[in-house]
Amino acid sequence: MNYIDKSRFMVFMIVALVLLNLGTLGVVFMNRPPHGGPGPGRSPEGPGMLLMDKVGFTEEQRAAYRLLMDEHRNLMHSSEDSIRFYKEQLFSYLPASNSTSAELSAVAISRLQKKIEMTTFDHFVKVRALCTPDQATKFDAIIQEVLKMMAPPKGPGQGPGPGKR
Image 1 (tube, rainbow, N blue to C red):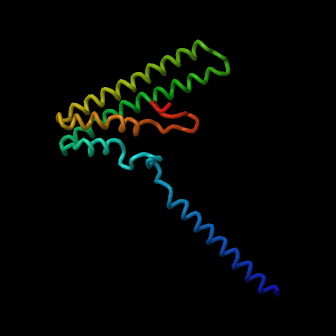
Image 2: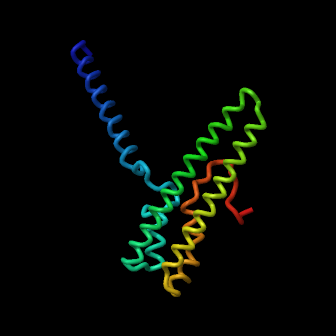
Image 3: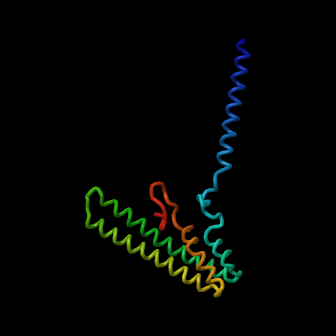
């Protein structure tokens, strides 16, 4: 091959590789879930939609439920922000090995976590109160599934879920 043929061949190969890379990137980005989308095994509609649909909420009940969800979300954000603060404070005691202060931060975190759990329980008591007797039966049948959807996903090495040992 002469010099011109080699140059054309190289240009052709470079263009082919660039197109192949673009195609690969396109496939990768087109097949991933959108940012903030559900993780594996999670409903794209989220636990709220699943609950409303399976229980059979009317439009009036849906509106009331959305208000309860907003209220609950605001309460959760406040508590979660406080937990983050105390966790940062807790680990700031590492250099000084200050276990007394660390213990106080851990106690504050546990109180806030208890508050989160009770706030969530109270939220679902209010949601169940929206239900008719027939809907309450459906609610009781699906609530565990909804709670699992709300839980953070388990990472590798965290073992099986409750009741699977």
